[in-house]
Image 1 (cartoon, rainbow, N blue to C red):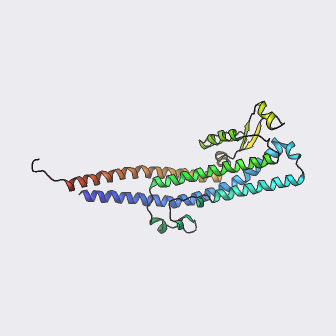
Image 2: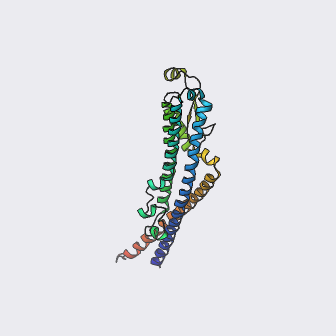
Image 3: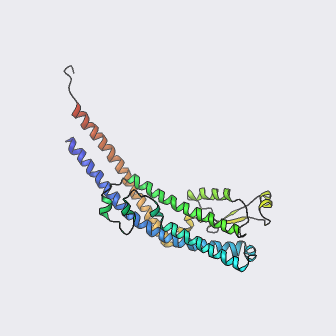
Length: 268
């Protein structure tokens, strides 16, 4: 009877692994669509935010540039936006989602490939968390690179904005909005810092691409994010059941081992 119980529990665990495998295939498809849409959206927003800085926030600084430098800056901004779009679209390729190598390529994913390796829900949750972190890092790094480009071209005042950027990044990581104008952050610097860094006075405005703003402003991206949340909920539910069944199996195996090894002492 105990062997039958263990076998039944194992069958339930195998079913959970199969359900997890199905979700993995679905997750890769959804994330690829999400990252493709997000890449196109953020590419546009990076250009729009740069346009806002050059024409609304610091128009005098942009006008001081000769025509060839204006054109060079615009071309570099387009390059930055394209680089960010490409980086986002290839995030899944850059991560190891605990699948066989041939399964990482979206063109060759199939159930037979993935079934050969059982995947536990917790492992997949960790992979998805890595994907989310990679998205955040890509937005943060390209924001910093774009600000550096604007500083080198004397659009943004030359000053250390590392602390401001660090505070903004931590807020964004916890899902808090820190931008009044989408993707632009503002800092008030003290007089000493202003005097050392730039003759211009007033708040300093810089680019900070924020995922919540991107999703809110693009319905298609938001719809994909909704599907991603549903996947997370399904995986978390499977993880809870998987943990429970694993514990049941261990208890059943320990009970069976006890009974199999029990020998009644003559003095008992």
